[in-house]
Length: 174
Image (cartoon, rainbow, N blue to C red; front, side, top):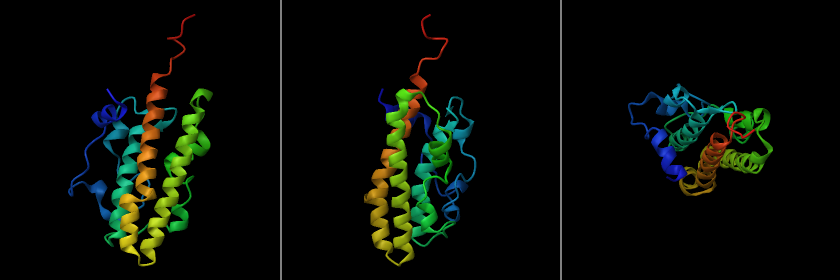
């Protein structure tokens, strides 16, 4: 089974309009309401809830779209959004990620993609704030944000799988 197929089995579908976590006014809240991901066993590895981190990436795109369309207010200026060390994933990547050195290349790729994601999101907000809403929507759907979001989720998924497949001290031969 492919990694994305495996993840799809563990990740909820896109919320409908009655889902309060998709409310447009929560545009840039970091975590918002508790998702089902935080309650799944095995989701937290090395101090990060990977399911919730992936779910947050998906919801962030929805909230950015709501802001660009004028349906929500931003909670942060675009310059703050560009900082990749202020969200939960960013803090983990910059401060808390103490992994086996063999995972460092994947962790570095995740850091780079996550930074690109924040810069692309900030550019979308900057465009929307300057009245270029159509350009911002195109950037959200087909530009750097879409690519960085997909790549960030892919790297998160790969790292989660790699960490879960890592042998434990008990499983290593003596």
